[in-house]
Structure formats: structure tokens, C-alpha cells
Amino acid sequence: MPRKIVHVVGTGTIGEPLIGLLCDFKDKLGIDGVSFHKNTPLTSDRAKVKALLKRGARLATLEDRFDGFNALGLKPEFTTKEAINRASVVIDCTPSGIGHKNKTDYYENFLHNTDGFIAQGSEFGFGKMYARGINDDALVSKEDRFIHIVSCNTHNLCALIKTLTLDNEEKGNLANGRFVMIRRANDVSQAGSFIPSPQVGKHGDQQYGTHHARDAALLFETIGEKLNLFSSAMKMNTQYMHTIHFHLRVKNQTSLQKVLAKLDGNMKIATTDKIDACQVFSFGRDQGHFGRILNHTVVSIPSLHVSNDGTEISGFCFTPQDGNSLMSSIAASMWFLYPHSYESKIQCLRHLFFDEV
Image (cartoon, rainbow, N blue to C red):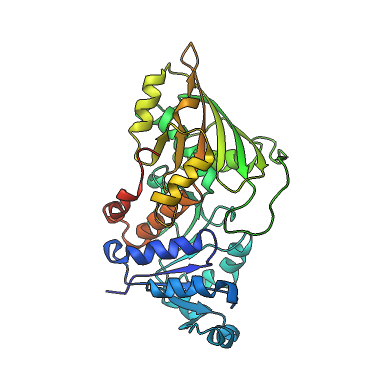
């Protein structure tokens, strides 16, 4: 039986914790090996690479970068092409646009011996859109070779929509969904691109507003749902968490008690009595794997409101720091490796989800 190897390209906000998760649970997940590509040898990244190597991952880089890594005391084992060639699944976690370039330059040339390729939220059009627990039924074995993991905020939207308006065979129940994405300026690991004050965004999409509603709508289309969604976005001068205000208009009357029951019934959704992003973030730092909350969303219970006629649900929720995309990336990898049993494989990660934050 061929060895099952997962190769991660990139060691940034998503790549680094993803490599760590795969290494920590590789035996339970049925993975034989984990490798990762690091493009540039930097002294500032040496400690990070050392830590990943210590966890059991194996380093790959461009052939002309070997000397640079060796000079840092880091020994690459594979060239870029060698690492892709030996991999069963490749997960691209590079900055915006590079995933598409890698698809053209590398991935399409290795379809003959690689089960599948995965890219992150910025790479719109890379492959079939996917979010764990939302549209698993849309994946087609041997046909979907490229998968696009939607962004962390799109995960949040999709989890809210499916749980509160579409579960329990409530097809067609959502009249419309309106969202305001209150985004953090940058990640705590990023030194640049911070902003001095709140910054509003543009509505670049005539139908959906921003890519968040567009991506959610297109994802739901893969399972036969055509939804009326619209989103706006702005940035805040904070590094803690994205926050989302949601307003869902439904056709079937509901109540606050029913809403709470639905939220409690989804293990991928956490609830909290906290109203401050810093406290939610701090909980993840202290209790989460790699300091992250891996749920799709954290819904603030004090913010929830249901209209008197039971047709409007409003509230605020927090988006975990790219945690939800980590779980979807692993689920998609396991689907490529074990299409008929991936559900049971990923249950080893179940304890990493929180019911309450």
C-alpha cells in the first residue's frame, strides 16, 4: 500500500499550526509522514522551523536555497518538486495569489501520482469550495482533485446559516441573510499592515457586497441551496479576533430557546457569555491547541435577539483565528486519503472543540 504523506506549502498563520496538528495526530489520522515547504531561509524563522522539525515534520525548499538553510543549521531533505512528487496530498497555505501560481507551475504536473491538492481562502477558483460539516456531500471522489477551503469568516457565516436556518430539512427556510464583518487589522503574528483607526471597506460585488457572502452562497450552491446573502466588511485597529454581526430572516417562526438549542446541538459551534473579543481570544490562547479555538464560530449569547414575530434572528459572534480552516484542511486531506472512512478518522480531533468559551 502506498505511503500516505501530507505536504504543507507555507509556514504562516495557517501553515505553521496545520503542520503541528498533522504531526501531533498523524498516527491516529493514518498519516505516514508530514513534510513542509519553506521558501526563504531567515534567522527570524529559524526557531519556528526547528520546532516543526522537532515535531517530526520534514523540510523541503527550492534547490538553490539549500545552502541558505544549511547555513542556519536547518537541513532540507527534499527539493520543491521532490516533496510534491512523494506527497499523497498537498495543502497550499501561501499568501494570496501564490496558490494559483503553484497550481499552474507545479500541482497540475503531479496529478498522475497525487490524490489531491488543497488551497486556502484567498485562492478563489482554485477548486471546489469546501467547509467541514457544511458541504461534505458535495465532494466527488476521483473527480474533485482540487479543493478550495473557504476563509475563516466564510466558515462562520456558513455554520450560522446552516445551523439556524437550514438544518432539520428546513430547505428554503432562509429568506435572506445580512452580515457585517468587523475584521481584525492583522494577525498577532504579523508585524505589518496594522491600521491606526477603524477602516470601512468597499462593496466590490454588486450582488453579494463582499466575497464573504459570495463565497458562502457559492458553497451552498454545491448542495443545491440558492441563498439571498449580502455582506459588508470593515477593519478595526485590533489583532484579537474578527467579529461578525448577523441578521437572518427566516420563513418558519422560531424563538430564542429554539435558537439556543440549535447552537448547542452543533459541536462545531461554541457559545459564550463573554462579550469582549480579548477574553475569547485569551481563552483560546490558554486552552486551545496552538492557542487556537478550532470551532467554526463562537456565538455571544448575550447578543442574541429574536424578533417578536419569530422571523428575524440577530446577534454577534467571533471568528476563531483561522482555526476553523485548519479543521477543514485536515478533513479535506483525510477525504482524499480515506474517502469512505474519513469521518471516523477525524474523530480523534473531536476533543479539540469547545462547547463553551
